[in-house]
Length: 114
Length: 109
Image 1: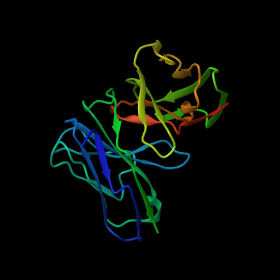
Image 2 (image 1 turned 180 degrees about the vertical axis):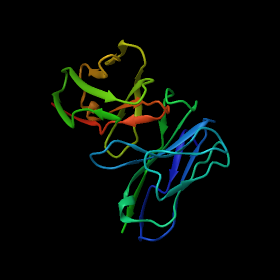
Image 3 (image 1 turned 90 degrees about the vertical axis):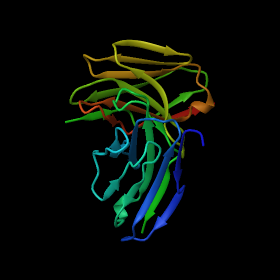
Image 4 (image 1 turned 60 degrees about the vertical axis):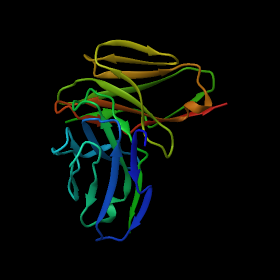
């Protein structure tokens, strides 16, 4: 593994189902982030983690949860998916926990909720 | 409120120069990033400015004016592979990034 990986690449999901998007980094970065990207809108922060064991809410956290049990993994869970959660989801990481560090992005997960 | 504004789309000719502008309003400011994103791919880092002035990196340069809440990305000697979206992002008082919607740059031969 080199950098950040995300799984699955894409998924079609029925409304009401539970879904976990996986994110793993091998750079030993302290901070990790989950964004969603929708057409015509900028990347919007869902949740973040400044270090293993801690998480925080971003701009659009409702309907999503995260955990950070170790440095490498930062899964994003949709407890009960709704069509408005149709989006492209990007995981990112940075060496430091401040917003002044470069963020490195995974390839993204394209999620469609029907 | 917090806001990042950049043009939705720009068109330029191969070999030419193009300037993509970004204005920002954030509650506290700790730096400005530019990222490149090709269609269907992840954003990749281009530049970071925290002090006023111009930062040059090969064919790409980025400028910041903190007093005006303004930045631009300058791309020289445009190549077809520069066709992409360019994302402007400013750091807010919580040290999180606020992102613009991106400028889609179309390069014509």
